[in-house]
Length: 211
Image (cartoon, rainbow, N blue to C red; front, side, top):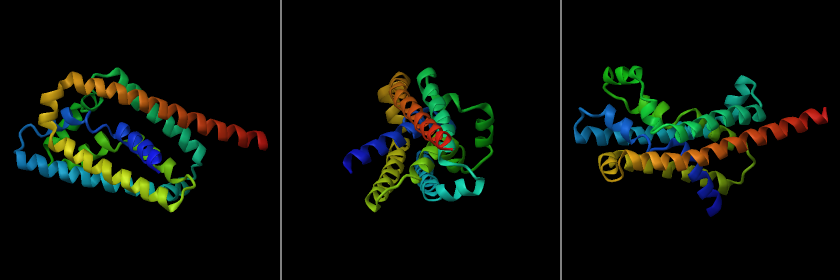
């Protein structure tokens, strides 16, 4: 179970990339007080937890509602995850690059930016959601479900700590350090996406051959 926890935790952490969200968080909260920043970091982490938990629990219902097969989800999700991985590898900082003027203007008009744009889509984006839905459809024992729940909870708490300490993190490791970590995560995310596409295509081809 330890290896399963490490694998799931690493995948979710790389997809969310809370460290990469540090510059975006600081940019959106530049005029906020320290207490308000901590409050927003706490609320964002709570939203992240419930977003991830919702899509993990309701994955099967969502697919049934839209009539989507697991193989189709794996392929589509793999493409999205690969795109996220390439974005991490190519850009200096994906989270800051995705902080468009539209998002900035919307954030300035809101009193609470913890749910959007912070929790969604800057952190719990399409890649994370598709990964959780695909994971929820696998045959697992109760211990594995508890392990995934623990990963979701741990990631949420860690995201809170990272956002709370974002000024210190940026001060000590700088933009270059964040960029270097994003490259490492991007490589892992890209491999995860390719594996998802390969698994989906393999199952799809098998079903076609059996027809």
